[in-house]
Length: 182
Length: 434
Image (cartoon, rainbow over all chains, first blue to last red):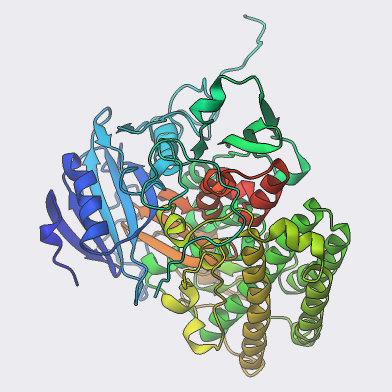
């Protein structure tokens, strides 16, 4: 529908499952959001999601591959040899799900890629709704939003260590307090 | 489609610190979710900071509000959340797609059926699986029953908090009926796990239709009763009208959805504007009110319940004619084989074993699916690496968005109004904290 190449910092556009993903440069996220709001009419910030792709293109335990006609013998299955997903440009993706309150409910996903520790501009000046959404991603994923007026932990305790939704966060235990050793 | 309208109501506003975001906005500028004490009041000794919650009957769970009071007036406010954070999103990454379906229901524990639906729809969108018509209509029916149930809990508890205790008993009477219907269909009163990727877990039992018919007969009368109790109650009107104002512009800027948005005069409902399931084939009206106060949020939900009853009736009409039709897709790679086949068919046994132990694979990619849950836009963002487990699951929680508006709605309110405001935003803390 829209000419996505005019979005500031535009890198690429992808259509998948009927959804549009527009990848923009990290440095231009706020401009891209402002452009989407003012020029393209996406007036609601629905969600801000960070995804950690650490270990994404490493072999994991494969699952049950089936096709309608049965097993495809040319694709090895449960031996851990599954096809690897396409590599990602960086460790973290930030996705901004936008919605336009108009006929047909157009939606777009603005996406940018960043490595651990890279700062990204907060979009609070564009949508106040980003306040808690960004704090949550900071808390659980450790994304640092530059210019957020109150970037503190939201869901975890203030003195929590680490960012639980990262793929390298240890699961299955937390430090025991008041143990005999203390 | 959207209409904007300035505030009408009691002029009880407190001047906002700094410049508002745009003309007439009540959003506190520095941090939208925090109401700062005006500098002029810093010097006085009259400000009292009250810790409201996390365990307080009127906070609907474990919400903590730090409130600065000048007498009875709220001059500062900040919400502290996270007391119910359970790490659902992390847990779901460890489970197979098939097992992860259990989790979303427990996130928004009042809109459980809708939350389950949004996750199942996301899986189906990635798998590209066809769902039988019967399953689609049954899903719609259960989601609408769930919407009524959720609104009944809202109505009962928020009236209770404002002193109308009897409302609680009346609404829970009808809620019981809905939970009984759930039990009849799925064997569970709440958190049914009745939706599967591909359709429904079981066929609809034959005894369901007459019981559901009884309910759609009772419900409109019950709604009239509620209106009689509340809508002519002077105390209820005084305490809700003109309280907790949220303008259409502010609501959109704060990402509101559902009844909160519609009570602020924005005509928006995903069931109509972005139809999913078979909502484009049923007849219903989207109630919109323009006052943006607690009372209008209550009216929107009351009207929605009546509309939901209409949808349930239309679903029943359809479903009663679908006797004997399949309720789940015939895709052995994703759907569990019928129980009775396990004793006679080797292949079925293998399929069953594989799906339960390893899980089915979902093609690599990312999707975002949104539905209209009782609280607004409930969304699910899912990333798959092509394996048997989700790589990332994230829920767009409507309660989370609604609670962000607390500070905006409470500017200049009285402490008693704060209870009404928090109640009217209808935040389920499980949904907020996930």
